[in-house]
Length: 218
Image 1 (cartoon, rainbow, N blue to C red):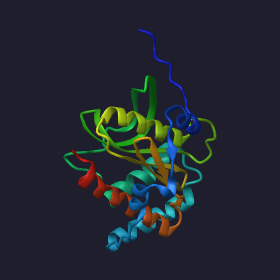
Image 2 (cartoon, rainbow, N blue to C red):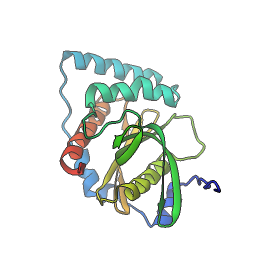
Image 3 (spheres, rainbow, N blue to C red):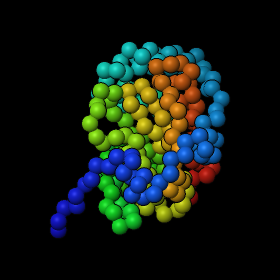
Image 4 (cartoon, one colour):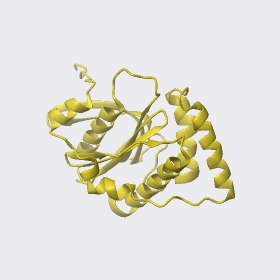
């Protein structure tokens, strides 16, 4: 059997090929997700938050992908968001290859982190995707293009018509993304080295957990 050729897409190419619309501020689901109250921590949480804030401020420009993931993203999720439940999990869904045929076109991309319902190492229903890369990398693939491609693959996999949520991380800069059918919105930039922005990042991720449990789970 001939090996399928993997294409590296740009965001503009995906928009043109699949007739996608980028709406940003005009997308209600994105706007609703971003409306949050800053979290209040106990003493232990506040201490660890300040340590993470100091660490990302000093190291974000120098970390590679694995260092960013292990030293910052994973501790942030484990300590302040706790995205674990019997119905969904993220263990085993780091650095996974996902693929599908969408409108007759074969798509395959690497997903840095995926929150999904699954069995073993098989992701059955993806809900949330992270795409990240270190700040100095300028060559393709584009993280936004990878995320949108992952969304298209997840839509084909899930076949439930529900929106998909995710984000891109470039060094310390986070952007949140929602896709519904062929429309998607991208948030303004949050800088994780800034205290209020990091608090909002945590609050937005916590709000996604509520959205997941009340709207997205079957």
